[in-house]
Length: 226
Image (cartoon, rainbow, N blue to C red):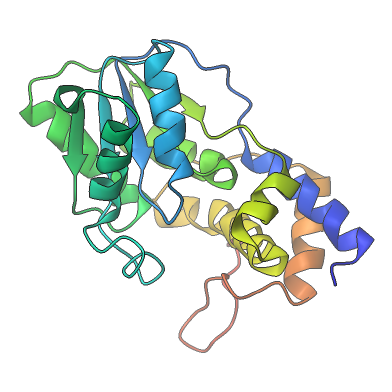
């Protein structure tokens, strides 16, 4: 049972992880691979609304998607988009990326090789990965305007779609930790974290929502350098 305090803290993380950008027309839309076909659905919706003339889906497999998406995340996203009426001619597939950094770098390389000029990217992710994806793209693709997007839904909607509230909280806590430690490792730009969000993260991570936290070789939770 999730306590009221834990749920309130989770809501703080949920809202912080979303950038609050208003979708606008961009050179290309890039859907970041994951277990969630909702990313592909969001990409299709934005394409049909005229927000991008081209879709790129990027992603290989992870332990959580290998069985569900045996042909690879990007390929399954592509199939979903075509099933929903997007012409195959406007969909590019990047099938090798295994993390967010590779999603960005390999998609950039693919577009360069195709001779496509990019000045802005509509970056589509899971709702709680918007900020992490944005910070990564800003680090690895400087000079490009990044507009973040995801499926519009509430935290409760997302929990219902996953079917496991504790797992969702673990994922939000893990995503926040990465925003704290990855900048010092050169993986993304630093983002300001409001005090109330940081306090909520500390309570949740210390309260047992820790399955998605990064740890060092001794099993200790990674923390940002002081």
